[in-house]
Picture 1 (tube, rainbow, N blue to C red):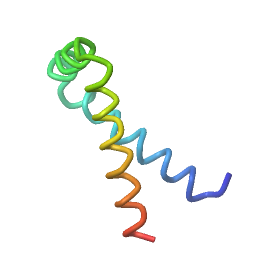
Picture 2: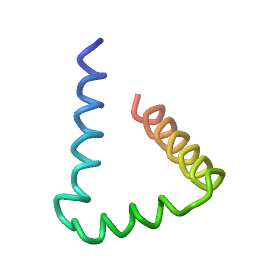
Picture 3: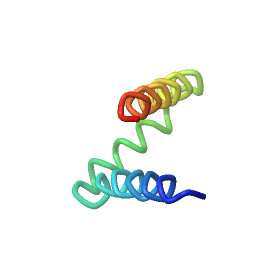
Length: 61
């Protein structure tokens, strides 16, 4: 893989780790609430995140 991919993966891990690092109780509650959501709503949220990430990446390249 190219160096850019590894940098992107590293940044994703940093951002994903901020929630449990800075506010573990709030993060745990949010994860519990998310696990109660129906599959379609989670898919919609995931799709929005993918599109937002693709747009940001496209705008920065």
